[in-house]
Every structure is written in structure tokens, then in C-alpha cells.
Image (cartoon, rainbow, N blue to C red):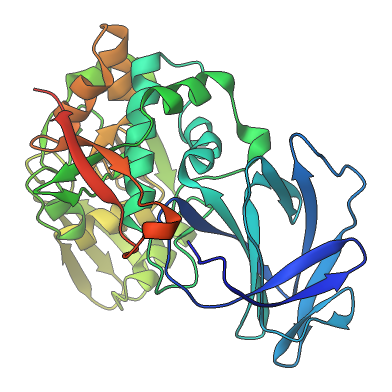
Length: 388
């Protein structure tokens, strides 16, 4: 992501931390926010060919407007150890491939892993999908995850993506698995595009038998993220795809407060209109002081705020409030259980992607050489259609 031009280096003991200078980005690497706090422990572990098992731990913390290493001022608010072939670094309690960027942000230290996108996926894919699932399902997840992160590469921002559930799960090297590594290698560089632009590759665990459109969930109209029957998700998940929950009064009132309904103590909840995919689009909440109605994406969000795995839901009982339904997650884009079903039928990852992102194209992602790079965006070359 960064040029290798450096202002100066800070040398403490046997380790060298380089102070980052601004420069043109390279989309070959992505920046993942791993940890943010008053201090961030870091170890530089060398490379696979030259490991440093006894490498010291550097406690990086804030000292005024600068960072400090083990109590000694670094003379800068930003430190950077560039990634190199086979390099590894420990940030917090976990080990990651690549290098590390440390920066001061509003009185806290941000520990950011700078890592080749393919190496990043080695941690992500097995964290998002069981590594023992069939190859076509894993390959689908690899393409989706690669597209998701590549679309978010932005040199103008301090980092590109986080490492938790709000982004993509990224546990580092300990989470890697040989089967998902093979799926990543088999799809190396492949991303999904629509109209020549990187697609929004949202995904969830289980559509519950019918994918949701981006419009109904987020009010975002995208022609390749539509509502359509998805029987493969039901076939692959079986009874595991069905659920029932009991909502406590505390949870109910908490959701009403979060959505600023101002109804007083909640007395009753009912669902009205549903979308084409069978997801709730109208919720009426009766309280001690007034009645309020939510519609559209807000209604579905309220259902999920009640603890429902999916907004493809119904009210089974009013007192206590008991909800039942199918699926898990928002239901937009790839259904992981659906990908499992397709893979069990012998379909390819392009078939899977073509079904869940109709009209998209699989393209090969190529990066400009460092010496010749004139822009930060990746170069896309068409390879093939995503599938039927």
C-alpha cells in the first residue's frame, strides 16, 4: 500500500522500525486494523527462512504527540515495517504474515497489518467458511472475500479493513488451513465485477431458501443483488436452517430504544408486510404510551435487533414474544449453505457465483509493478463470465 520511501528509521536493540512517509499506494497489499488501544505489543518474527523465535516484544504506546517504544520516544506519530517475502509479525496476541504499520490516532495506538492480499485471504477464508467443505464452495468464498477487500483498498484512508465481524474475520496465521489455501491458490487473483467495476460481494450464512435484495435490506438498489428462490440453502442446511427464539422484555425494550420508537414500555409486537423474499418489511410496536410502525429496511433491522438470526421471520407467540423463521444473516448475495449445496451437486465456483451475483463477471486482478505504478487502483482484465 505504501511507497518504500522512508523519512528515517528508529533503531532499538536489534529491531528497526521505519517511519512512514507518504507515497503512492500499491493494491498488492492491504492494511488490516488488528488492534487499537492505549498500547499495542508488537514482535518482528523475521521470515520463514530466517525466523526470530526470541524476538523481543516492543510495547508501542503514546507519548504526547508521538509514539514510544518500550518507554523511549520514537520521534514520530507513525512507524512502519514493510512486508517482505515470508515476513511475519505478532500484533497483540496473534501472528500475521506481512508487516506492520503503527500510528497514533486520537490518543490511541493503531496496530495495522500490511499484508499481500492473497496471504490475507489465507486467514480470512477458513474463518468465514468451514475448511472441510467442498472445493467449489471454498473457491466461491475466496473470490467473494478477495473482491470484498479489494474494493475497500483506499490509500487516502489510514487502513482498508478491520479484522472482526463488521468486516471479514481475520485471525492470522493460526487460522490457516491447507484446504482453504488450495482454494485461494486455485482462484488466484479472481474477483467479481459488474459493468467494469468491482462488485459488492455481500454474503451471509444462509438465505433461508430465498435470497434478499440489497434494496430491501439496506435500501441500496444493485441489479446483481436481487431477491430470488434459493432452494440449495434449504437442502444443504436442513433443519439447522430453521430457528425459534424467545425475546425477553429487556431485549424488546432495548431494541425499541435503539430505534428511537419512544413507545414507553413495549406491550406487543406484530409483523405486517413482507418483501418478495419473505422478509419482514413492516413492524408495529405497541407501547404503554404510543404505537409506532417501522417500514422497509428499518423493519428488518429491528427484527434482527430482537436477536432473530434472520428477518425472514414470523411471530409465533405474542406473550411471551416468540419468533420463528429460516436462515441466518442478512441474506444478500452469496449464501454459504447454498454454495455448499451447489458444490455437493458437482457445480463449479463460477456456477455458484453466477447464481448469487447474476450479471457479474469473473476477472483476473493484476497489480502494476512497483516501479511502474502510476495509480493506486488495481488493473482488471476480463477472463470469463461468472456463470449461468
